[in-house]
Length: 88
Image 1 (cartoon, helix red, strand yellow):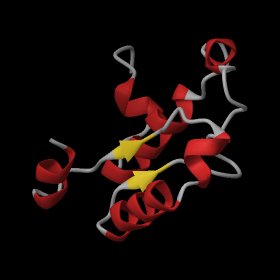
Image 2 (cartoon, helix red, strand yellow):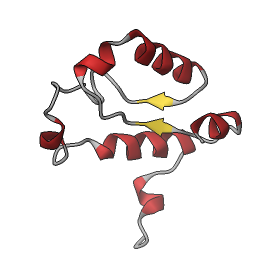
Image 3 (cartoon, one colour):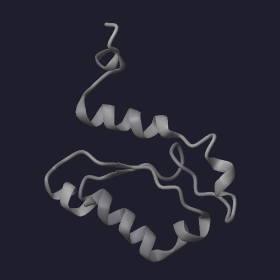
Image 4 (spheres, helix red, strand yellow):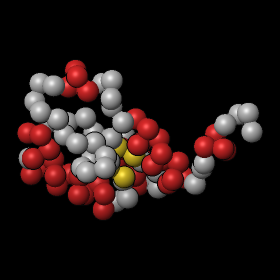
């Protein structure tokens, strides 16, 4: 689905939840680079999602930065918080 949506020009934001071992692998890094080259916004690295230590995933759900993905998609499609607020 991701490949198909990318070809259609639909804005896509990916906020991966990965550990440092997966993030350090060449196939993963190549995939991230390829997707970014096609316009997919991948929020990974400083200022976004920092890969975790192995076997610590359960600890990361409470502070998972969902807001980064929502802010990024808003920026990509040109919406603002005010436009999303039904009270305005």
